[in-house]
Length: 457
Ligand code: ARG
Image (tube, rainbow, N blue to C red; front, side):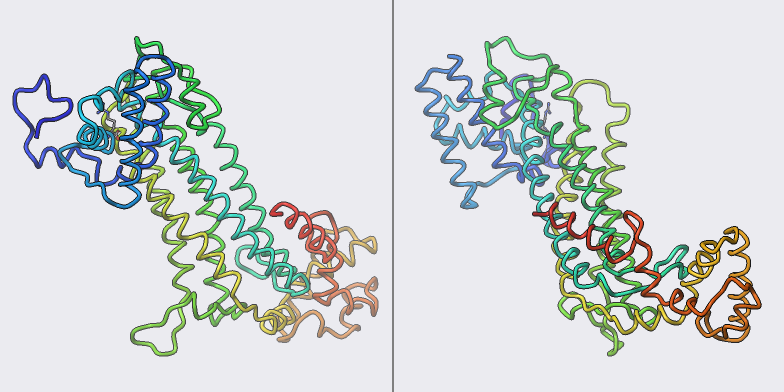
């Protein structure tokens, strides 16, 4: 088949070479964006009298037919037409005749493909933000139900201090909130039209780039034609924001996995979000959480893949840049799969308050309370730390916890200690009293919850 660009060629490439160079197997995802971009381009060409009204009307009706066919899944694409742009141009010419060949006036595939990807990502980023909000709402729901549920908080995965489980969960709310902020802020750089930059240097035709940008809903245009066709930072930025978002999900997934283990028994995942083992009948595995943790790797890979592809590329367009798409599509797909799964998993999980209660009463996570108690009574904190540490050691030797120490032993360690220490050592008291701004104190968690609810509307 002769190529749309075949004029200067004496022979055509072999099929297997075409196959290597073609992007149609994946860039057909951009079919609607490409048709939308072409529509805006033609309207602008007509308004600027580069195409006659009749020509424009014919091309626009042809593009409309292609849109309908695309929606109905009736468009066939072929490798010999290389990519989505040439496939659609070929279809248009087949549809309306040689006038279809005027579509590509004052345009190149280089500004065309960049326009398509800006349009694509602009919409996907908005959808991703919505999916993150839905996920946040599940977190808020569980957090609200568990403000008063007390769990050990950890550092180094060692029991540290008792905290509200709601407080723990809300941590992820805030991480996701920043992820959304990053995504929203990136829209400013996605919402930019490359269309009309031509192959790299602009065009001799009297086009109106701002007009076509306006038709496409872009807020502004690239100011430099080489930059317009060479910039892929908006994709790198998306992949980077996606990586951070996946990293947060992966940390949460890891906790979900730990908490549902027999060792923790802090939560039980709903059957709908768990799987069994083909050999071990007792198993209930947190596969979805593991998979999200695993998929984080592929998103990082997509980020590093593109950074590496772009590194050292001279201006302007290079075919290397065709490699920008699959990782971007894959990342969108991964996020749009992982977010609703995580949302459902969190919304339906059962929190085992009994195990949490048990855990928090049989550990030393209240040791800071004793040290703080002494410090509040005037003992230098460093000394209070030492006194408490020695008492912890005594308990370990005797096989019990701080609350089990007789008052006489406590008073031997420091005469500052009174009967009220037993109240102070209770996990609930410990949590309640941590009322500093952003702390785990119940009042603070309620305050935080109010802010979170306001943010997700
Ligand atoms: N399929 C190409 C890509 O995805 C479109 C741009 C091609 N431009 C060119 N001059 N070969 O990058």
